[in-house]
Length: 341
Image 1: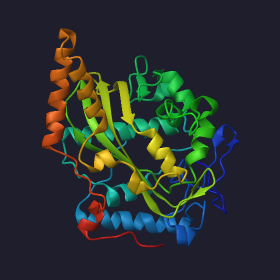
Image 2: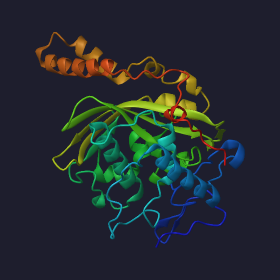
Image 3: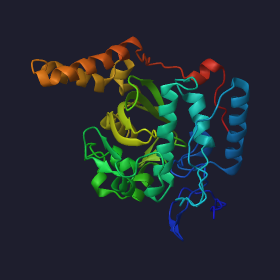
Image 4: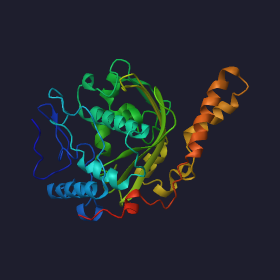
């Protein structure tokens, strides 16, 4: 049974009859306010605010001929949903369409990868039984971040996405080993109203796709007692995703600067002081790959890897992601701004 949102729409999360509770199926993990001044700290969106968002979303799609992302495998009748029913991504999609920096054409590799990763995120965050995750090869799936521990499908599902992706983060900023699935999600859920993700560029096709990505949110809520001021918090990174002949993920390696992200969340670094390498049009992870290849260029065993790395970097430079410090979102270029509800 789909849980009915509580009248107070509070951001607490507990377990009742095996089903996690949440303010609404549109704010299950991200439960922060839409606007600092309107909602106040730590308060989820009201039903009226969610309805306004949904109306705005439909208007945006109509006015600009846009489509919402595709998250597959949400209609299986036997799915064991963490929150009692399939999630409502209208709020996340609303923020995604208004604040993304790329609009990939239909059929492009970037759009295929973007929707696949969004499907994986949906399944990992909302489907309790990992044997029901259809975006991955459940027997062979592996994932790691920044050279940290490699998790298989079962363990990754048990500890949760945050703990997997922050496994190798500085321990003084985040201790993944000391947090349960629930604790890791609770740590972040008051910070943002939504936390969209997009693919920037793909540099190689299947079976192993090399791609860059952007993850962002408007810091309207709180994190570890630190109050956001409505600033845009962004993460940029590089990924390697291997898929099988069914386009299921079998191996995922993610690279990004977790220290910068956590320091921004704690108020130890301003958003403008983060992502400087990206703002200069360079991918730090690709630069590291090139440096490692150059150091070993005298060894024959590394020659092929250097050529492959430089080929990826050449394409990256040809299609450089030039993100200015005073970056203007795609939404402004399209002529609309978020209304203050």
